[in-house]
Image (cartoon, rainbow, N blue to C red; front, side, top):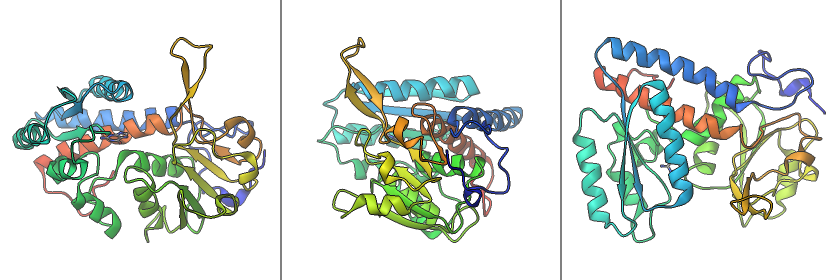
Length: 320
Ligand code: GUN
C-alpha cells in the first residue's frame, strides 16, 4: 500500500496507525478528544457549572432516533446534562420555534441541537436561524456559517467537517498546499468542509475542489486529489480507479444497502468502496469507526465550549 512521505506531517505517531496498517482510526482519536473534553467538564463542575445540551427531534425517523440516542449516551458518559425534546411528526413550525425560544432563554441549556432532517412542512433554515448563535453547537446558524467563511474562530463549526479536519490533523496528514477534493456540496458537510480547508490558516491552506451531481468527469478530479473527502451519499461511489496512489481518503457517507442475510434487511455502507480503495490509498478511514465517532466528539467539544463561553467572554481564538 503506497504511503508517500509527502502526505505526512511532522508527527506521524499520532492516532493508532502502525506500519502495517493504513487505517485512520476515528474511534481512538475520538476517545483521545473525549478525555480532553472530560477534563474541561471537570474544571467547569469545580466552578459550579454543569454543561447542558438539549436535543430536539421532530418525528420518529429511525436513523435520527439512533443518532440522537448515541449523542445522548456520550453526553451522559462525559457528564454533560442532556435532555431530549421529542415533537410529533405533525408538529407545526410555530410549536418548534416556541420550544427553541424557551431553550434559548434557559440558562441551564448551553447547547441546542435540532436533529436533521426535519419534516418537509417545516422550514429548516428558519428553525436553525432561531437557535441562539451562542448555543448553536451544530454550527448551522447564519452567524456561525459566516464566521467560518470569514475565518473567525469564535464561531461554532458543524460537527462532521470539524471532525474530519481534526482527524486529518491528529493523524499527521499535511493539509497545507494539498489538493483536496470534496465530493458533495451539502450544508452540513460539503460546503463547510471546503470552507475550513481553504482558510488561510494553520492546518488549512489547501487547494479545494468541490464536486457535485453536475460535475463533469468526477473521476478526473478525484484522481488529482491528495486528500479525497467523500460526502455525497451514494453507496460505494468511490472506486479504486478514482484514487491517486498514496492519497488520503475520508469516507463520510452512511448509506443503506439491502442485505437479506441480516435481520434488519439492510446494512450500512459508506461512499467509498473500502476493500478496493484500501489497496491504492495511502491512508483511509474505516466506515464505521472513522468519521462517525469524530462527529460526536466535536459535538461534545462544542457543547463544553458553549458552557465555558457562558461564564467568560469568548477569547479571540477559542475554537478548541
Ligand atoms: N443530521 C445528520 N447530521 C446532522 C448533524 O450534524 N446535526 C444535526 N442537527 N442533524 C444531523
